[in-house]
Length: 119
Image 1 (cartoon, rainbow, N blue to C red):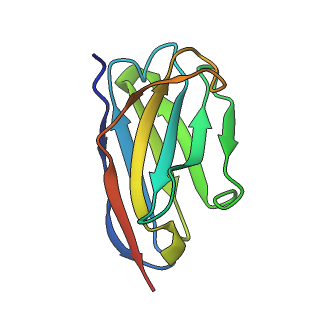
Image 2 (tube, rainbow, N blue to C red; image 1 turned 135 degrees about the vertical axis):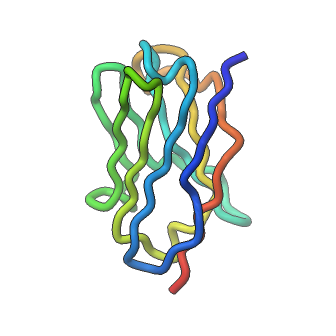
């Protein structure tokens, strides 16, 4: 069982930044990784994802503000979130896909980290 551990969430004011981290045995190797979020009363939605070769994909709502990256030597994936808005408030989940492409199925999820943005 792969364990993905997120960290870096917290409470910030609108316009500020946070960086989330996701560490796990698979995140530094051949698998695509992603970040999803779920706000209260809403469905879980894609935020950003990154393939094993570094290709990236973002939700329209975060383009230009969020950046996903990976440090394979540290088996870690990051989500840099800038210019945060109250509507970014959610629990953020890291995930690992079944192959190097993020068009494959999601095999594993982290436990989630809360991000709260106050206005």
